[in-house]
Length: 128
Image (cartoon, helix red, strand yellow):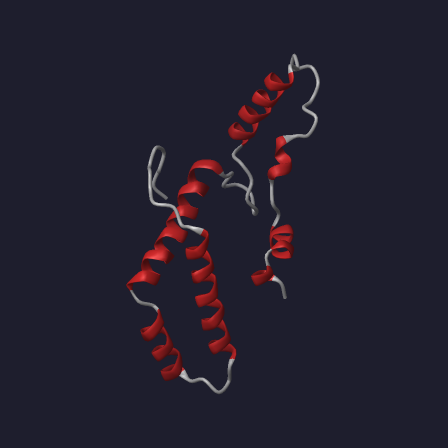
C-alpha cells in the first residue's frame, strides 16, 4: 500500500459507517434468502448502491487503510498501534506521571490493542 504519511482526507462520520453496515447486512440477508435469485440481488444493488453509497464506502475503506498504514502494526492479526507509537505514548505517559523511566507506567498503553474476539464480542453486527 502507498505511504499515506501526512495525507489528509475526509473522514467517515458515524452515520455513514452505520449506513454502510446496514446496507451490507441487507445484502447479506438477501444472499442468505433462498427465495432470492441473482436478478433480485442485482436489482437490490442497482437500486440502493447509488453514488452516495460509493462515496460512503470509499470514505470508510480508505479511512481504515490510511489509519492502518500510519498507525497499526502490520505484523499482527489484530489492530494494535505500531511499536514506535506504543513506545512514544508510553514515554509520554511516564513523563506526564513524573516517572523517571525506572518503573512501568500504571497501565501499559499496549492495552489499547483489540483482538478479533474482543471486537466481535463488542460489535453487534459481528456476533454469531
